[in-house]
Length: 188
Image (cartoon, rainbow, N blue to C red; front, side, top):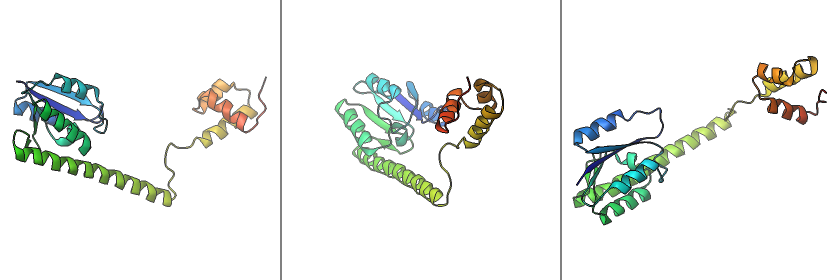
């Protein structure tokens, strides 16, 4: 009966250090480490870890949101653990599914984790809407000035399109596309 740890962060820029320390202090035998979004239910390392679990094993995580972000996914995992006789422990949330209270807390905490994610998403969308109302341009910056400069160089110099593109920090394809859009006669 193994004690397996699972640690996850969303991006490769984030560190697993605090999770790894907590899992090691708990006394896990092996730790699976992953860099992927919690919203993604089909994570490669998660799938490998789940396949490795055997009846009587214990899965230990630092916090519920490291395993999944949605209540449905958490509940599906818990049900699978129960059917496969796998114990589950969340260190930070004080959940141990070998007890009825632990099972209840798991369900409640999963609902709170999902609500928190929804509130964050709602705040981001509200912020974007407010920014648009204030006239803030969202998305990638426009390259209009560079295109205008490139077209002017194309029309007033003998520089090759390749040299103009490099000078204006554009691709040659972008230069040609905008020459075509503005119906500029191409050189021969």
